[in-house]
Amino acid sequence: MAFCFRRAQRILKTDEFSSVFRLRRVRSNAWFQVYVAPNQLGHARLGLVVSKKTAKRANRRNYMKRVIRDTFRQHPDRVAGVDFVVRVRAPFDRAGRPEAVEALRALFARLSSCRVSSSR
Image (tube, rainbow, N blue to C red):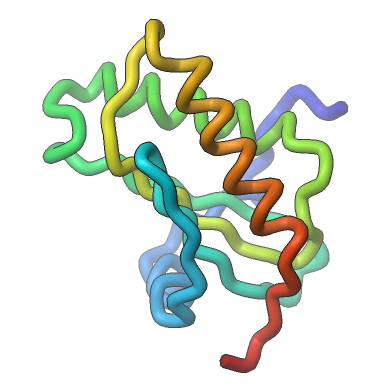
């Protein structure tokens, strides 16, 4: 298992986020909304959206992003060639972390089992 989250595994540019949002393949639960789109890279990538509306303080937003990145990195059955954009719907802290991680793992498992194609 790799213990780093490389730059190549991240979605950083606005147009990359827009292309994932435009496809509108989404699964959600009370904690997260995960958008999915195929890519041509051969490896999975992750983009994160944690708004100020969700958490006013930057340290809380950064904590949530760190937890999501760690969960993504440790998720064993990631689909190669897929972009994931995770949007936080409800804030969580250290006390709510286990529930949030389980909810995110369930979404990743659900998305890994369904086939993502480039056509609608």
